[in-house]
Image 1 (cartoon, helix red, strand yellow):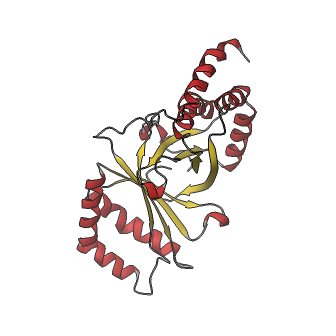
Image 2 (cartoon, one colour):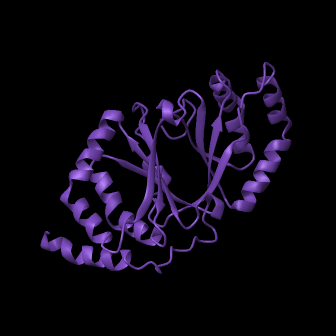
Image 3 (cartoon, one colour):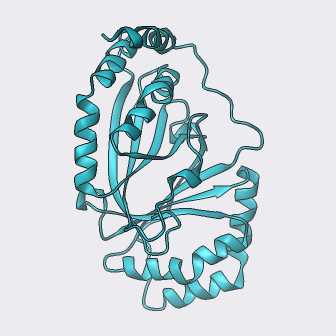
Length: 262
């Protein structure tokens, strides 16, 4: 091990092996995020996207919701051609509730929904929603925006289920090592989040979003990251008290033409 890494990695190990280390509390004025997944009826994704493009996004803004990003999966196994995944920002849970209530009662929404469903319903099932808070190491969202005129990037939504009592250690590894290594290897850190509700994985789950230039760039970045000796050392030292994750998953996404983040 490089001598310069030893003090930092020993400190990480001390953090990582302590299951009692609490996750930092969310500030009272910190925003709340909402990750929503819609599954369209066969052949109706374009109609769903048109409704968001022409009506829904504007109505969200009217009622105090912030449109962070809208994406569609790239791979069939993840719902390509049938799913829309998007992220909203609210001032609080109470603000979210008030915004959704006002949105649902808005005549503009009711008219748009009725017109878009004249030929049949668009959604195959009820939307899935997860309320989340940003981690203390999550970067500012503005830092993740692509340069003006740049082609749309490929996004990667990753979900990690921590081993029992290991979420704080997992956060520590991301905070102290992983984010910097992602950046070193060409990945853009967009946002890192924890679910707020127990039935959605609160206390056990880390959800984060990366951006890549394209799928080939993502493949190359992950290969370089995994081959980096600093990552291998950080991972080994942080897991001396046991592995930090029980399950991980990744979905590659393309931004819609109306997405704020591209």
